[in-house]
Length: 383
Image 1: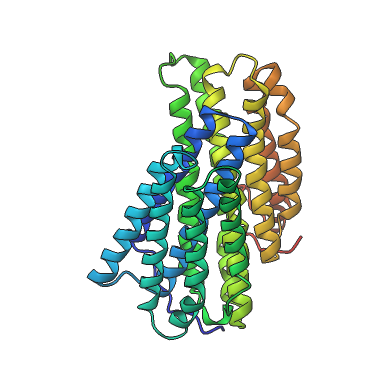
Image 2: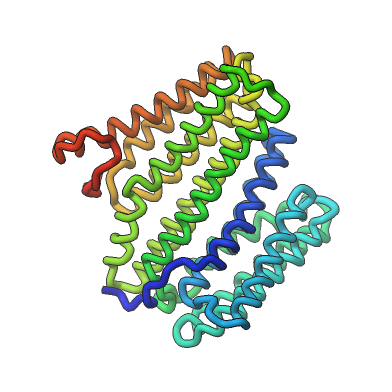
C-alpha cells in the first residue's frame, strides 16, 4: 500500500468551503442563462477552469493539512472569502470587476501556499515547486483585467494552460493522497453542484401556476438530477476509491488522482452548469416549442456530464464507460424533440437515462439474483 496520509473524514468546515465554491456554479449558470451564446460559454469555460483548479488545490490541501488549529481554520476562512469575492465578481470578470476577480484569485493562491507549507515534509517540498507556478497563473488572470482585448482573453487562456502544465512540472511523488478523504471531498462537491439543477427547476417555475403540467415538468427535472447522482454514486465512487487506495507507487497514485478527480471532473461540473441553464429556460415553457439553444443546453449538459464520467471510469479502469458514451449520444439525439415540444425532449432524456442505468446493471442483477436495480454491490468489472 502506498505511503498515504492518515485517513480522515471530510470536516464540516470543508463542507462549508464547498458551499462557497458552489456559489460559483450558481453565478456561472446565471450569466450563461442571460446570454446563451458561444462567446459567453467560452468565458464560462475559462472562469470554471481557473476556479476549479484552485478548488481542487484546496481539496489536495485539506487532504494533507487538516484544518485542526485556529491558525489553519483562519487561513482557510481567508481562502473562502477569496472564493466568495471571486464568485461575486464573476458576472463582470471580463469587464469592470476583472481586477477584483484577479486580486481575489491571487489571495486564494497565496493562502493555499501558506497553508500547504504548514504540512511540513514532502508536502512542503512539493508546494515550493508548485506555488510559483500557481501564482504565475493567478498573475496572468489579474493581468488579463488590466489589458485590452485581445490580450485579456489571451492571458485568461494562458492561465489554465499553465495550470495543466504544472501537473508535469513538479514531482508528483512528493504528494501524499488519502484515498478515502480525497474521493469523499470530490463526491461532496459533485452532489452539491447537482443541487444546482434542482434550484434551476424552482427558478424556472417562479411565478408559474402549479397545475398538473408544471408539477409533471418539475418531477421530470428531478428525475434527470437523480440519474446524474445515480451514475456517479451508485457504487462507482466507492470502487474508484478502492482503486486509488490500492496503488503502491506514489507518483502513479498522484497522477491518477489528478487526472481522474481533477481533469475528468471538470466536464461533469461544466455539464451541470449547462444543464441547469437548459432546465431554467425550458421548464416554464415545457408545453411549447423550445429554442434550439435551450434544447441543446438541456441535452448537451447531460451528455457532457456522462462523457466526463465515462472518462473518469476509463481512467479508473472500471466498467460502465460504453454505457455512458451510448447514453450521451442518445441524449444528444433528443435535441430536435425539444424544438417540437420541450416536454417531449425532457421525457425522452429521462427514459434514456433510466434505460442506460438498467442496461448497465441488468447483467449484475441476473448474476446476483437481486430484484432491485441499483440496490446491490456491483463488482466493478472492466468494460
